Length: 258
Ligand code: MN3
Image 1: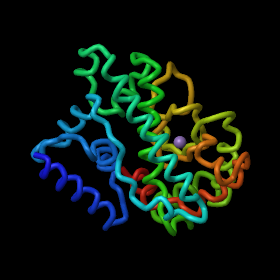
Image 2 (image 1 turned 180 degrees about the vertical axis):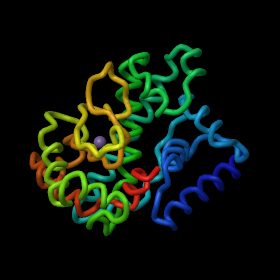
Image 3 (image 1 turned 90 degrees about the vertical axis):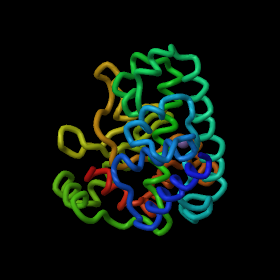
């Protein structure tokens, strides 16, 4: 079984690396189940069911720690991924162990629990959000990224914001105005592109009694100090400017089209 799992995961990772694109839900299944003890014959729906069982593990980083240099430095990437993200994974698994068995059995993927977030304790919200948001974030960057989005997403950005430069300005503003720790987002909300931000490890999929940004994520930027302090110290604006050089627009396009 171990060999089958390894092969399955290898095939998934290879498919993503070779096409350079990540299609819809396969992004999340890969990101959240990469090391889980799943049987090769399991269907995607079963994989989702098995997902929320306290078996989460770090998704494989799709590039080396130094691959985003000079825009995002190696040490920041290594600590951010292997320490910060790992801590969210570890603490999510611990938090799931303390949950009522019934609640776990009736929950599927992380995405499904975000839709009923108020039923879960704070530790699930913080660490589940942390795991999900970072898995998304790594996929939304790549070496030699940046430039401008092509295809339907590029068209929608121009139609919504007037120009790509105006979109960048508004997204950067949202990143700068998020007080303390949180995330900036481009989401699809009621069929339209919307820019916003969330505090802590919240995300736009979370149902939080009507409060906060809602929508389907297309682009995400981590603006916690741990994402930039080693290189940029307090200069969040420099970090946000660097981000535009590593954005994986193919991944954002795939999320937009899914
Ligand atoms: Mn982070």
